[in-house]
Image (tube, rainbow, N blue to C red; front, side, top):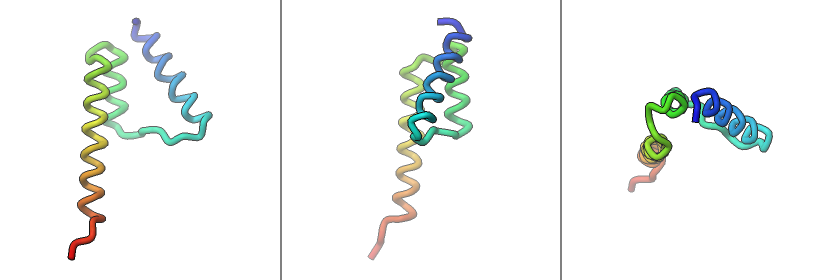
Length: 70
């Protein structure tokens, strides 16, 4: 798949999500990874792994701030 085709796929997916009124990931890390995937520098599995790790890190940080301690 060409870089242009990958960029078009990303734009189409983001457009659909916006039209559905769903939240979009806006972090610089994620956008950078999308660019790497579009250029075929990383595969989709690596993109997914990095994104899941980002979400897990955010979740752990949130839990650390919000968990009640006796």
